[in-house]
Each structure stands twice: as structure tokens, then as C-alpha cells.
Length: 398
Ligand code: ADP
Image 1 (tube, rainbow, N blue to C red):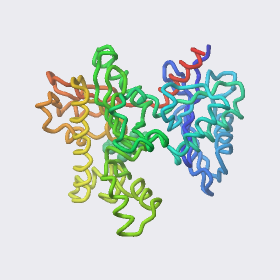
Image 2 (cartoon, protein in one colour; image 1 turned 45 degrees about the vertical axis):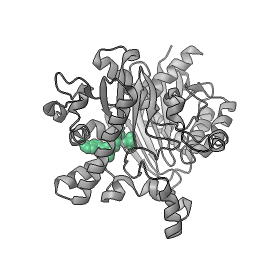
Image 3 (cartoon, rainbow, N blue to C red; image 1 turned 60 degrees about the vertical axis):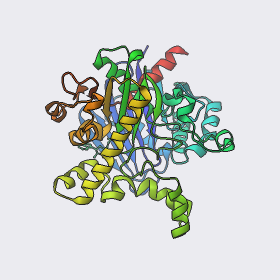
């Protein structure tokens, strides 16, 4: 049976794709379509070490996916639907309905539609991607892999907010958590690196990308995570505030007369590192900090301190900890951040080795000192491979 999977990740105005072997992770081609619906659309198709780009207006998702398929026709490899084991889709919000990936049918589309109020920015785009792919690849199983699924193992006391019953029961307001495919991939890889069975491994995993979150993982299952009902809660992010006094909404509304939409927008798009320093890109922030920029320095400190607080909180939640694991663009590439986040935690048994921490590598590796009771690891994430792997598993099982 073929192991070839096409993975699609449809965002609000972009579509990313990768064609890969779900067993080995080997990619044949990948690409993205950006600025869908705008006049300056852009397609990039990478194959055989070369990038092919094309700029033209891309009307909608159907146009985007058709353009990607044209790029496969023109630049290769051939993408005959018969050669695909599955199309794997990233779906952001599965609510409390999906703890596993599922093969998509019309009924499932309706269910995902029902979840739109929980993820108004993401789920409509994911749905559109699913619908278009079902049309263009009839007969190929379409598998939805949910960002929230991994966290469905959280115990009730961890996912419950202290709010009135009606909000919880009728409006499904609770902690869901995101970045689940990344946590699944990284946890497995971390246990391999530690040489421990996953079932007997306790981890604090820090996914630090443009969006950022932390998770406490016991035996391969999430027991807590920092993102909540939405991906706004928790760590400081590129443009999102993370944790905030919930009374700030009311305060801004009363003091400035701002609408809820304006406040939401500011907390999602104008806060975080951007709000603190004027830049949302962590690499640029690090350069400014090194050059003595005080705002960049404060932003870095606020970011690192928030990460450190979550490490402590999740250590307490787990009781026993085998490793702190860094992943995502910032986690994988910023030794300064790793050092600042774990600074002074030797009493908790966490000791970095500075030369290991500073060594550049794209491999999964230890950055803790020999003899550190708790390991510190860097594990590059690969969400597309995880989606392909899970899609294959579902197709084989069905
Ligand atoms: P996404 O969440 O969009 O998948 P990534 O996981 O790629 O994002 O993370 C993007 C972040 O990683 C950006 O803030 C970027 O500046 C940061 N980053 C990438 N490389 C480095 C580096 N060498 N040093 C510091 N930060 C980096």
C-alpha cells in the first residue's frame, strides 16, 4: 500500500501543503499559497531543492488548491490521486468532540461547522480546505487531524474554568489547548532520545513559535496546557498577549469606549513581543536586545519569565519530571531564551550545559549538563509529518 500523503494546512488567507511519505517523513515537495483573495497572491512550490514562485491573484481556496495542483503538474512530482493513501488536513478546533483524527464525510463537515463559534478565525478556512479537497480528490480518504485532540486527556480539574455552570455547559467554555500535533510528535521523539518508554516519561514541552504554548505531558498524554478556550491564553507570543487579567477587557471598554472586536484585535495582533518592543519576530528582537535596545530587553525578559513560571507550574502538576523540551522556531533556535527560561532552576534539578546549549544543530539533542537530574532537550517539531503519520494510521485502521 502506498504511504504517500498530501498534507494541507489551510489558514485564514493561506494554504500550505507538503507531499510526503507518512512512514519515513521523507518529503517529495512542499509549498504555500499566500494572500488568497487579494490582488497580489503568491504561490511557492519547492521540489528537488528548487523553489518555483508565481505571483498572481488567487481568488479563493478552490483556486489556491487548483494552482497548487497545477504546480505539481508543471514542476513535479506527478500527483495522481490513485497514488495517495490519504489527504491529511490540519483542523484547529475539534472542541471536546474529537480526541482522535477522523475520516471526513458530510456529517463530519457539519460537526466542524458547529464548532466555528469556538474558532471563528481558523475553522472556516479549515472547512473550506476540506470541502475543496473532497471535490478535487474524490475517492481519496480525507483525514482531519485536530490541534485540540491531544489535550482531550486533560483531567476535569485542569480544563475547567471557575465560571458559572451555564457558561461551561451550554457554551462549552473550558480549556481546550492547541499545538496538539506538535506535542504528540515532540513527546514521542523526546522519550526516544531519553531512552525511556513514552508511557513512563513525564515532560514539560515548550512549543515556542509565532504562537507559543506549554504542556505538561505524563506518559504521552497531556495533563495541562497553557492555551485555553482560544489560542490567546498562556505564554507571551509574537503578537498575542498571553495571560492577562480578564478585567482588562471591561476596563478598556469603560475607559476608552473600545468595542470588544477592537480589544480582541489588539490582544491578538498588537500585543505580545510586538506590543512590548515594536517587533514580533524573535530573531529581530534578539538582535535589538544585543544592540542595547531597552524595550527589546524588557520584552525578552517578560517572555522568558513567563516561560519559567510555566515550567515551575507544570513541574508541580506532574510531581516528577524527566525533561523540559524546547521546540518551535524560538525554542529550537534561541540559546539565549533557553538559558534565560531555565536560569536558576538548579534546585529543581534542571542544569543547562552552556556549550551544548549554544551549539548549532538541527538535530534532536540534549542541552542539559551531564548529571542534571532533569534533562533539557531541543526537539525540532514536524507537524506535517505527524499529520501524515496519523492520517495513515486512521486509513489503515478503517
Ligand atoms: P510558526 O508558529 O509560524 O510555525 P515558527 O515555529 O517557525 O513559527 O517560529 C517562528 C519564530 O521563531 C519567529 O519569532 C522567529 O524569529 C523565531 N526564530 C527563527 N529562527 C530563529 C533564530 N535563529 N533565533 C531566534 N529566533 C528565531
